[in-house]
Length: 169
Image (cartoon, rainbow, N blue to C red; front, side, top):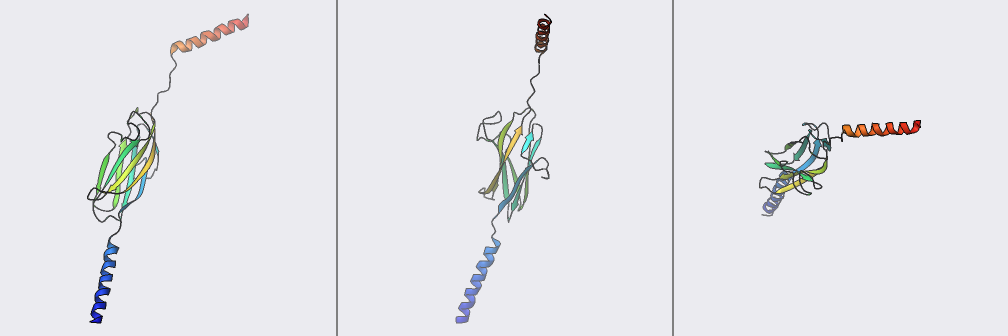
């Protein structure tokens, strides 16, 4: 009887240990922004007309996960008010298990400069947030340089001509 109880206790401990080893915590082990889809050209500054790419590596996921990407304005801008999600920037990527969730967002030409935060949230199959990471992004918008008008140029020439006349006298 004593051997039987010992055997049951040892078996229970081994079963619990085996179950615990199978439960690993799914997480987002890496999150990087880049100028290319493969993530070889890491970047945090982008120009109007570029595409923001991001890769979120999901590790230890035994089941389905969803990665929610979204861009938030760090200051009031044309794109959104401070703290608000930029319209059209939210994307959800489903993965059947561990892997890399890829994101891309083309930056429209003519967008003004600004600072933003790109967020990635890993959700489990129940929609519960399990992990998140963020990256600061700077967008250098297209600003047209101020062009001199013809009247400004002719005024400058006439002023220098008047000065030259005064110097001659």
